[in-house]
Length: 371
Image 1: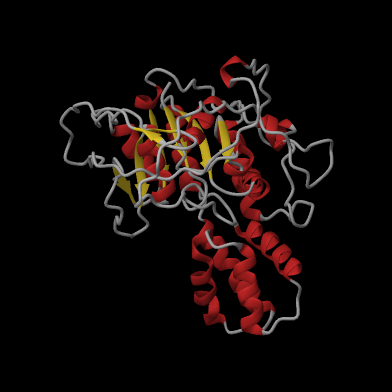
Image 2: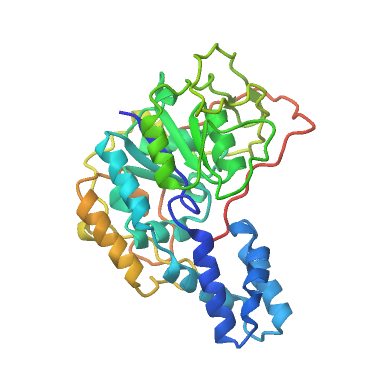
């Protein structure tokens, strides 16, 4: 079965729109200039600037006497209250599911915050599995995180699995570079931006998720990706390039001169290979199946439900209640204590690689979104 992997923020969910909505509330509640939404959106950096940096700067700018912890709690509650999954995106997932695709989420970010988004928006029942960088202890563009996602979706990342797998995302250094390194085909959500990376390119481009899913389903004659570039803990090995079939004019060829993307050293826990682990019965996801998700790490509990979340969850449950999610294990609370980090499902152990000097122009690894 083909596998479709999807980024979470600004791919499945309009995260930047939720941030702007929180920023408007923040300014209105404190009688601050409404036009400063643009200032806050700029320093937010699309979520890649640490929350402490954003809120400390706001504190100084407006002379606020509120503590940073209080502002962080306000931010977490506020942005979660505004996050939702658009109906058109849920419809796109249903179309892919009906076409026989396995679906998974691959997200860079904090475990608690990202699981809360998945829970609130009803995405849990719509996908087969998910992986979040904090609990997996590796970040996109590391190829390992895509292999973990495949396993959690019930797809063994062996043989020619990559030729049947696509990655859709908006952040080129994480999503598209990661797909290139793992040997996957990709769709970049441009959101009106020009492509700016000279060393690699997406297979396809799209304005939004519905268009991206439509392109993937229609790309029967899309080129096979080049052999995967495997990145070890301390160095990279490149596979040889194979000749590719001619492409249709609508498909962009990934650059053969792909640059190496630095991969932070990951010290995986000593666990057995995931291929050898018996998954056992897999519980169905969603509130109607009793899955307990992590609460917000800052306020220790779930933020109040909102209409968007309720509508999205109901729609998702109606369309995907039969989907079995193999990621349920790490989505549960540990020992029933709110705010504690659950144990992750077993991760594959990265094979050791001999040390090799880093190229002088190797870029830094892609950061995780701060929220």
